[in-house]
Image (cartoon, rainbow, N blue to C red):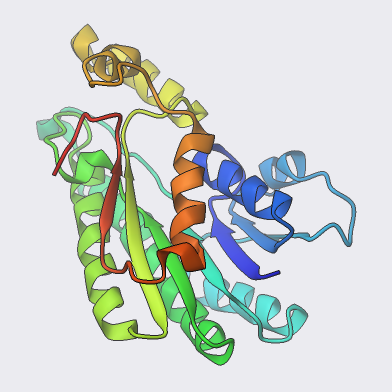
Length: 251
């Protein structure tokens, strides 16, 4: 079995992905900045194949240290990385601050880059592997209340393509672009949209209803696609941004 790292593993898609990998018998390193949520999400006893590291992936020094721990305790083995950590600064377009933009890019883009950077030597020394970045359908659509998030996720797609080119052939890099997913993050987004006076059509259930499949995805449905991209079944796929949107986005 393999060794995998999942960032943003304490909730949502990251949690679902970590659990799928764990159930498949892999050793899973779960990274998140919230130690309390990590502990609640993974109460498994020591030796169960789950390891947790509290880290803010936007912090270069801390992220490097986290991967040093992983390298030391996994004998340098690593087979895959999932960059699921992310933030969604929100506000009317004219009200967004520079700090909002910096936060979105610091966590969503630079955080993904740092995890790629520090995982690459381990992946190479392990014979290669696979990286999956969490982008979003927001990377491909306008976002009147989430402009920094949308732009940062478009940057994640660009980062994915560049990394796929630079790290080939031993390391594959792909992105997944989820649509509306039934997670605590979407509950927070809906509440914020309501407070901002956004039209009801932007609420998650209303948006999902307009997709051909007509409902939100579950976190596990997205995690299934991530697990596939990590696997040898996807050995000839790299540099792609895979939509998991129920047909909401088809490009």
